[in-house]
Length: 157
Image (cartoon, rainbow, N blue to C red):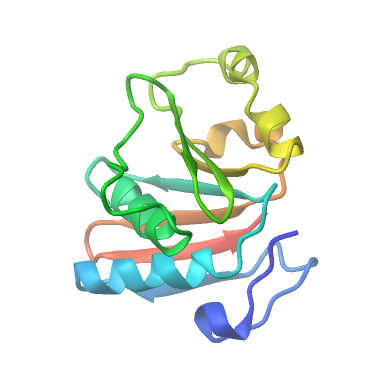
């Protein structure tokens, strides 16, 4: 189960912290990369990270930072799966990166089988997944990225 730890953002939050959120300023690309590195260090197989925010807010950039920290080599392109819907990467963890932007129904999300992949121990990194939390298994770290000002708000569901 995901939990906020002192090493992640300087606060501790355990299973009963659904109302807790933490906001972190991201004034530079480096700050976003460092956030991705810190988050990656506390992830395990079967975890779910939902990334939300406007187009261009940095969701895929943050996924790339997570993937690099987890061992996806720099020679492997980590891009948005907007048109293919799902990309898989092998690293310290088996990573599934999904983009649900183009999907319009919960049934379409269920058809992807992401919940089964999570049950098999894969780490799910899902852009535009917040409307589909039930289909993805509920227990998640939600990272909402904003453009003005550039920041991330993290909360556990």
